[in-house]
Image (cartoon, rainbow, N blue to C red):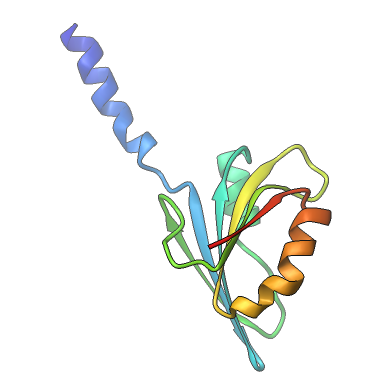
Length: 117
């Protein structure tokens, strides 16, 4: 039994790994902050691909967190990723009126469910 406890304790760091990333983008009159909460994307692919946008001419900061922070004005729940079988929740921060175009995009393109906060 003691060995099982030791094994479980050694696995705790794996459970504490980040499952979300906050992406803050700034450019010419543009300031966007989103958080992607991983649902089913393979962890390495999530970290190295989905959380590393290549946006020309913009400053991009990425922070890995255990879960998306509070304060979003809306969430696209269970968003499908580019016609792949992967899913994520996308939290949006900043200008609440952006929901006017984010909600239809979430529902049509991402086949997700829009939830206003």
